[in-house]
Amino acid sequence: MVLAAEEAIAADPLVSAKGSGLWRYILIRFFLIFPTVIILVTVVFFLTRITGDPITAALGGRLPPAQLAERIHEAGYDRPLFVQYVEYILGVFRGDFGTTLTDNQEVSQILLQFGAATLELAIYALIIAFLVGIPLGLVAARLRDRWPDAVLRIGAILTYATPIFFVAILLKLVFAAWLGWLPVAGRASTRTELLLQTVENPTGIYLIDAIRLGNPDAVGDVLWHAILPALALGLLTAGVFLRLVRTNVIGTLGAQYVTSARSRGVGEYRLLTKHAYRPALIPIVTVIGLQIGLLLAGAVLTETSFEWKGIGFHLAQYILSRDFVAVQGIVIMIAVIVAVTNFIVDIVAVLIDPRVRY
Image (cartoon, rainbow, N blue to C red; front, side, top):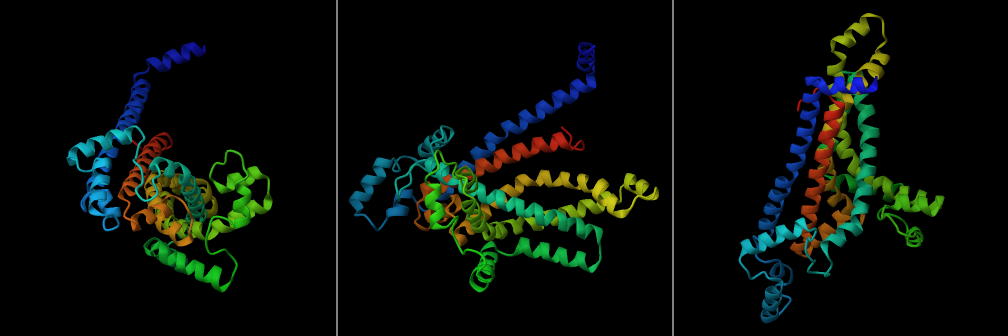
């Protein structure tokens, strides 16, 4: 009986066409990652070479001309630019992003060592964005065109438009300097940092490592240090979520099936939480990929403001020292993460939203 049902499904041209269409869409989106990455690598490579070769940019004026020329020759930066570009492209696809000029580290190792810190901050920020943006978006939709709605919309615009470093300064001034409630910088206290170094095979994500350590004080200390950076970065995305949820809930509340439910005597609260809530969340999934890029870009300023030593913090340090090998490697890796994230989000959106066509 089961076999007969499977044969019937396989024989159904509509089902087969839909299944083949889905796989074709997934393959097309997957293969689009590669030209996207190549274009990004090309742009970053040539932009970093506008001022000349990386060694002259980083060490020019610090070394004698003869020694500088020798370093340039050893690194191959005196070869034709197109040859350097092809070699760099091939190296990127092998996972080789070069070696930093200022501290002689492989860029791939820097990404592995400090990427977990940026990932942890991005997760905290997304949690803040969900906890703040979605409930307030529902409130704004429920109280549409009243004063709470106006206040929330203005707040959403301000959180999105205000520079992260300015928000970070305000948060540090109020909660660290004036009130003394929260730490001003760092991922954990010195004591907790030393304890986390005793964890075998650490993940680099302090919260997970503190939980593995089985020390409640360490877990609390890690979370305590994460509050201000997560707020500074998370409020940026919370404003986007608030406006998106509000707009979609208002549209859903005007749908025919909601009007029919209202005519049957269903209360407004139940209409909001049972009928309009879930459909309004679908568009959020589709913009998460874009928000990941926004979070990673904002992480540079957030990590610098709070001395959160992740990829963003080190990217800022390498920019100041004009180490363009490190800068182009980190920027390209961030671009790859964004491209892959967008691919995953597109697939999830197709699976949960029947309105998406492929």
